Length: 455
Ligand code: NAD
Image 1 (cartoon, rainbow, N blue to C red):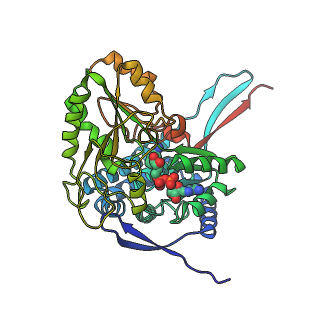
Image 2: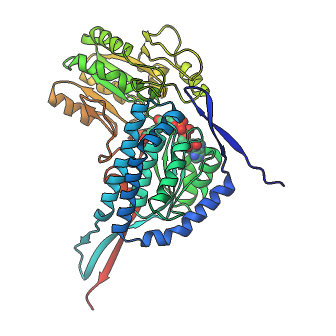
Image 3: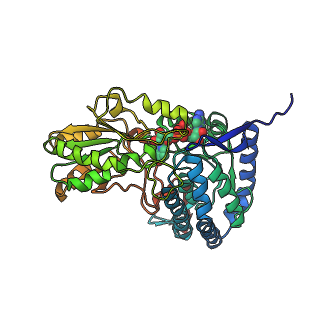
């Protein structure tokens, strides 16, 4: 049989233009990448921690130096507003700085036992497969690469097929930083081929996966055959709970950005806006006004706040959630590009719009009577990723915080993600934590050693 090269086109979703043609990796290339990573592992794990820290620090600096270039790639490939893309690249550098600092701070323990000394070590896993989605391609890759490399693993990284460009550029910067060849291998190819092969491969010790709950399920099932470790960062349907005693104007000004940022293609999107009935109408007026001000348009313009969706197929999926006349529908640019307007819908928590992840700029506003009902509705979802509570009552904020089944929560804020703090889901939003010192736990194994000291 002839060996045939398969290529695929990478588009700019704002213009529908092809911005790259790439060779598509298949099973053979995946096996070769795993073999390279396996070969590179012994030397990489032998690098002294201080030197590994220095290499990661150098990578962080290179990301900063190439910030404008990387932000440009991400903006064109994902349709992200350039300002947001710059902030994401700054976070990538911050993540590598953080994990550079963490390399030398992973201490073991000594544990009191009789007859000897007991101690623990943190050992690398070996080759890890990192599979990431298209919504924050470089950012989410860094959340996994940082701790994986800090813990002395070698890596095969598979970006989403729609958005492979920033990861391919990062691979070059990784080599430029002095991280040895074979330590990080980036493969552009389909999930059902490259991703699945990584999940099945006997030489891959762990899969760090971010993506949909549906694919997460198949990753978890596939990992069972080789008892692979998995970290799953999956979908969400988070609640933004606005109590009557909140600063309503502030809550309403923030709420659109909690849904429409990244055109709603955000696992943390607070796409269920729960509003206490006594302030429902007043809040909606503020919310519609604030949403009207969201600047939708050319991602290359500094002032743009929302770009297009990632693809025509995804736009169809998003549109399928909206029937009838919504409470509010914004404007979008005419002409080419996969645009979808900011949309606000009044809903009940039983409606499809409130149950399923839309992953587009569509918010469902759901009324509630009191604190108990707010908690019940917020938790009435299979997901548990993020959420916000808006109230001026500190005791209520803490009561509700403890009651909500979610991994990440903010009080009087939309903020979910920082390089230094743990991020991850409850329930079907996945398990394991990324970022901060918690992120390291997913990329090493605890080894316990007993040393007998008595004859
Ligand atoms: P997806 O699940 O379709 O794809 C994610 C990645 O998995 C891609 O690289 C894809 O190629 C790969 N893949 C697909 N099929 C596979 C298979 N059978 N085996 C192995 N890998 C496979 O998700 P997406 O559409 O790229 O991204 C959107 C989803 O990601 C949303 O559900 C969103 O909530 C979720 N997400 C979660 C987080 C989080 O941290 N919890 C962050 C961002 C996105």
